[in-house]
Image (cartoon, rainbow, N blue to C red; front, top):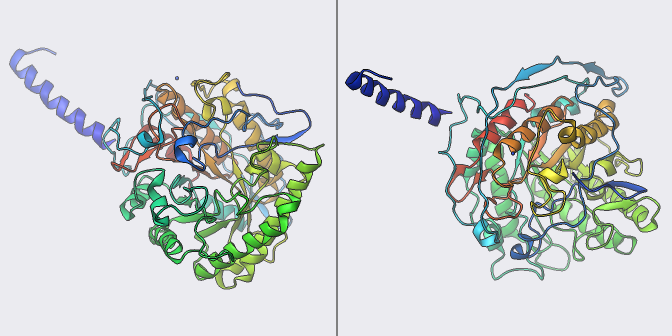
Length: 506
């Protein structure tokens, strides 16, 4: 880091002067029997009232280990799409000597999370910077990735960053006194052009912008507020002007007034999806493929016993999966009907609650599409759950991760091998739209190790990942923050170094 270099130079001068004068020298719950798979959840998001959400912990395990059987460095069978070739890249080694680290853990409230906080280090320039000594040295065998246009496209996404808890912030019951104040309600910092520039400069090529729309309508016909849409477009434009890729979605809209995947709500949900995406398609019709649309965020039967897992023997679960398939189809049809660049735009679609296990299940069906191979499977996976997402005071939670231990890496290996074999090997791209590791008891070194391993294993399978950043750093809540937006400082540059060392290179 430039900061480190400057400090060492200063120290060397001091020592030189002294010599002249003196002449001396840091386990998850199992999925229920008969389940499609447990979910990767946005429990990291603060839903509804942020003060409540800051202390909310999901009692169920949303990231239980999947049933995949792949292992680190295993050779995968080539199964590219018909008519496509395959590309097999060699293994590589990146990294440096391990070292320890520490973080912070203070009383948890949403208000504290949105207040400016003291950085651990000065903000480093990521350009020409040295890799952190905390980044582990990993050597993972690269898997065969079919040589097609769609998989080449997601490789260009490289690695992404979520503008979390910002435009997705919501208040039940509709507007606050001023709907525009919701942008800062959960994070306490307004998004700026300089902020997006910092994300780009750090090495991120993709910006995911989660947006809730259900409380920004001006009438009963789901007409989006012009000022809200203008503001979202402004931030989209900032990122695109930097030649970044942008993922735009519908976020905390799994609500009675939004979309809800049950038969009794299906027709109303179809209308909602159609109306919202027809307006967004119209607004962004001439934007090129750097803008990606994502149909829904973790669609699920919110508030039920099956919110985060599915029982394949339960009829309501079967019905919900079918509803999600239908809603994804309405999304694709609506966007394609928007014409212009929408006719060939890349579109992301999730399975039930965006869990990789549910995506890999045969009950999840990709929509039919008039564009050839322009659909991306959207997956969220905070794994290993006990380390990455589970609350530090919950039974089974751990703050330790060892990239050389199978017990640490098994969940990551299993779910990534699962979606790789189901989709990537068959020419269908996958994007991990949310992942991360919350801070626990100052476990910086473990978070660096996990970040490096997760990204390396995903990159070896042609799968880009997008870190969930909710601008939370203090307390015992879900502290996934990397960029402290209140003081414009990267709080954990060592984690950044790990992500950039092992992410896919365009």
